[in-house]
Image (cartoon, rainbow over the protein chains, first blue to last red):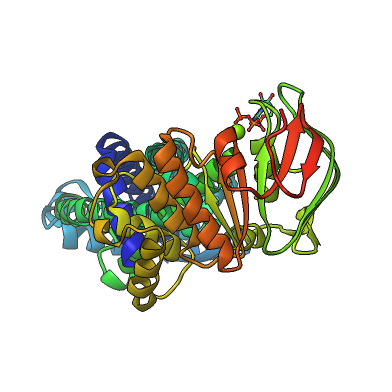
Amino acid sequence: MTYHFRQALLSMRGNVTATFATLTTMTLTLLMLGFVLLLTLNVDRTLEQLESQVEVAAFLRPGTDGAALLTQVRSLPQVRGATLATSEQVLDEMTRDYPYARDAAQLAGNPFPDTLRLRVGRVEDSRTVAAAVSALPGVQDVEYGAGYVDQTVRTLTAVRGAGYALVGLLLLGTLFNILNAVRVAMYARRNEISVMRLLGATRGFIRMPHVIEGVLLGLAAAALALALLTPAYLGLASRVQLFAPVFPIVQDLPTLLPILGGVGLLGVLIGLAGSLFASRRYLRELE
Amino acid sequence: MIQFKNVTLEYPVTRTLALDDLSLQVAKGEFVYLVGHSGAGKSSFMNLVLKRALPTRGEVRIAGEALTRYRGRRTALLRRRIGTVFQDNLLLDHLNAYDNVAFTLRVTGVPQREWAGRVTTALRTVGLEHKKYALPVQLSQGEQQRVAIARAIVADPPLLLADEPTGNLDPDHSREVLKVLQNVNLRGTTVIVATHARDLVETFRHRTLTLRKGRLVRDDPYGGYAL
Ligand SMILES: Nc1ncnc2c1ncn2[C@@H]1O[C@H](COP(=O)(O)OP(=O)(O)OP(=O)(O)O)[C@@H](O)[C@H]1O
Ligand SMILES: [Mg+2]
């Protein structure tokens, strides 16, 4: 085993260019993958939160029977729950957030109408519900947050898709580089390999240094990627938390560790699989 | 030990007929010369025995088993039982004589504690015990060839194939190498030597197989160079 290990290190030192190229693409792949996974995680979290918050507000004409409308909208299938806030209650809430609201109301009268607040199960349903509710008699106007939700979801999904496409491309690049690195390394010791074959070395024995090389490269790339990704993410997360606290950025380690660990493990697996494949192909060509 | 039955070998790309309907047997413990002009098929014969090539037609049997039955790992195991001294498999130039010989033991998984004894014995057999720390460049060609023989016999294979073992050597060194091969044979190893060297074949007489254009044209049990 020490022999194979030494051979692996020797061959990596002997082919600095190929080793470096493989290490770079592999690290980039893992970085990109980590980025996409973390993005997905946060997008999902945000969506969950938005969904629990998506609210359709229906403003009622003065003198409308709010209680009757309330039972009516509660029977809509997409509606999870509904409450009625009288204009007085709305004013109270607003006063809590903006103390001057009460003063303004005293001058100009309470500007807030009675309001029905509906919680909708899924973001996509909010538009339908809004349309249905606005058609009811006594409803003056309807407001819902779907506009910006739609936009955000679409953007994030697109970014995520592009990220996965990039991961795919980078993965191909990585495999190509491993193939090349192993081929160069095996070519460099072709004399030794031909002697080994004639002396009766098994294929596994001949391939072992190159498989070790692949795994070492995978380990190195994983370590590099994690060393870059983890602080960058945590830094970014605390920034976002500071400036845009509405986004529920995931920061707890029990959730992050499996993802980061998975990225690291994948690095090693790519190195292993790539070098196994490459060394087998090279020996096959020699037959 | 080795059995060829109507063996034809045609190299696929060039469609060269290297061996043509060749039938012969080599028994355990024999010393056999394989002679013939350049291109007669001597190396091709050896390649078949090592399963570096497969016959196009006919059957090759080694140790009673058809060549095609030595698959995967068994190919490696077959080759462990055959020592080779080939011109295209010279010594590894970054290893000294000792490590070159020990390389056989390393790649076949012999425990390291057995190496010293075996390597020393093998180097003694070829008379080079005192040169074990010399790199190939520090050895004469005859000495290099003897180290290659030591590497081929260190695992005690029952069969030794030598392809032009005296190729670049002067007559004195050639004789030395041949004496070493005879000694190996005396210890019970079957030895097959492919050569052009007429004087050697006539000096150290052994069974001689003569090939011409891939055909066996003569099988002389008492030796003699008949071209
Ligand atoms: N790998 C190969 N591919 C195609 N043709 C080959 C190959 N090896 C040998 N040949 C051809 O097969 C024939 C027999 O070659 P072989 O090497 O067996 O001859 P040989 O008797 O060993 O010759 P020499 O004394 O020059 O070593 C020759 O015509 C040669 O050109
Ligand atoms: Mg030849």
